[in-house]
Length: 176
Image (cartoon, rainbow, N blue to C red; front, side, top):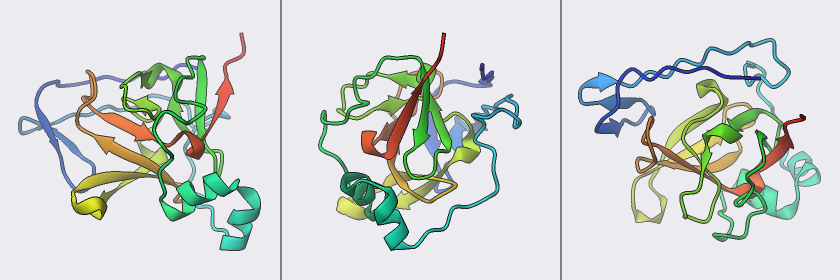
């Protein structure tokens, strides 16, 4: 499966509270031209709602702490941090396709890092004022699970670094 995207402008930017990337008074648009009929498509309007008991039964203790309680795994400890296989990264809570391996890069931060999600509707971004500073939290749009944060220090073409907890993801290797 291939995803095609077009970047209209690259340069200095800012991210507003809605997650919109503004480039020097212009908007960076990355329309994803993918098929919503694909089995790996993140397109879905069905939200996942579970009780805390159901989440605890479904997830490992570490996954529960990260996805449901917004914890963070220790840097350089996640099993997917050094994964260089070709494939897809899904939400460990609901299976939604979140990131493609082609968007993964080594940022040196200790967590899996991506330049953009597989589809913009797969994730939601929220202002996070914890730890005494402003950050943008990234959650799964389908189940609301905490994934990590997005920072404006990534490589071109987006300039973004989605810093994601390894335990919040599952990986499906691409078959030859």
